[in-house]
Image (tube, rainbow, N blue to C red; front, side):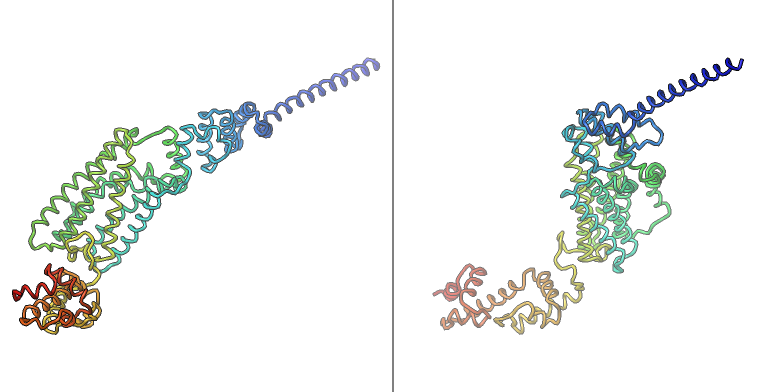
Length: 504
């Protein structure tokens, strides 16, 4: 019995050892298989250009919990690009960008095989940052706009309500142009909160300019029901805040990438199409209201003609934008290319910003409707601060100095000398001559000199005056200059004029 028990024990130990050895071998085989399916092996196959083998392991690895998905997706994209499978490569590129947005990845040399693919070019052109002429121009105009707003709001010469209205009008132009600059430079993905940042104000262009016109031409006082003009904007904000403005930056990037991946254009989105249509309706409707106010102000005789010119310039710039945008909106709704009209609509807004900016620097009082321009688009003397009464006073002094004191006889006379005699600035002296005599300083001097020269030549019955003596007498330094000025005025030389005067 003891011997049988001992033999049984030996048999048990032998069988147990065999089972253990088999289990160990099986575990080793499983471990080897798992090792070959690991990310390290996938990277190995990728590095030795066995892309199809690498792709199968990478795709399996994606299913693992805690896998380094950005790394795997990048390798999958590059592997598919290497075997010239652009569709699969782009699919993985988009998946990677959704997880870890890094547009510089597209510059990898591994994409050279598919770089000319339309889908790849579209993606690259949409997300890789770039600086173009239009980007620089739009950024400049936007910054000018914000500078102008500061000038308007800080200038005490501008009446507050009028200043707030025109300031807000320029603000929504500037924020829109800034958004265009960021978008065109492909930095919208780097600064995702710029996404649709100006859309909330699309229904404010008309109301702000309409009430600005009413305020400056009719001294209109606001009423409670005027707030109804803000209702479309309030409704739009109620939609945009939860859908766009309140979501995180990563969610906005995902939203933009989705639109890009599936090629969603404005005419493909019912919401965006509706916004374009409603904006056109708003612009056209308020364009009509503004036209009515503008036409009414033109008929008023008590309305300063200079102010009428300012109103006319702003009116025509805005109407130009309305017409261009209406055509642009109709075209994009119908899915047609609109590159030129897009830039034309933005250019119309940019001209408005620059013109208002120019005005804010030259004569800010114009925004209140109390002061404005002479009958030109870009006047010359708006900074002088010359009042009407002082202007007329200086004009009388000029006439006295030239008619009575004959200041023009000074052969070294210049504008600085005249300004000193008038006890004013050179700028004011020039403005007075231009506005009241409708000529330049040198033309005024020549006018008086030639007038006296003609008188001397007409009175000289015995021809005793030499021409050079007449020239010196009236203030000229030489005969050539005198002859030239004289002939320009009379179409005759001084000698011919003298002889004709006495029939000789």
